[in-house]
Image (cartoon, rainbow, N blue to C red):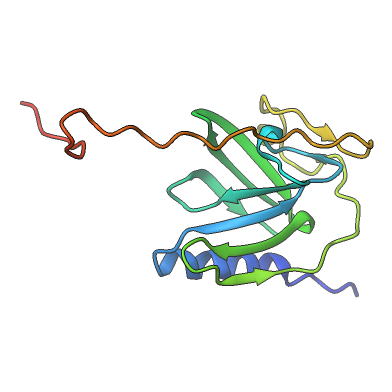
Length: 158
């Protein structure tokens, strides 16, 4: 009988702990082989993803993959990350979380990802060559303040 990995259960537990305490859960993923991530945000072979409920849509923390949609530079993209590629999960505010041993198994070709995720406009990238991954040149700009200096607000119009 094969042993089931505890990694997806621990990822879900840390994510729930972060959400319950108002922290922002971040996932660090080692990008290798073929993955469905926005490559322009990969730095040093890793990508850091905000997986809070406010930053994602349709978040699924499954036993094999972490799947969600999120905006990157204002463009909505689908992301599918194999659990074996997850390096750590932590709270942005205090750095508490959990790191995992590197998984040396092959990630595969995302054939186990459902069609709705694998048919997204993202391209699967093969990083098995000696080419360095493309990195983002700069961080996204923070929103500019309103001219009046007040915070934006909503009001009811009848």
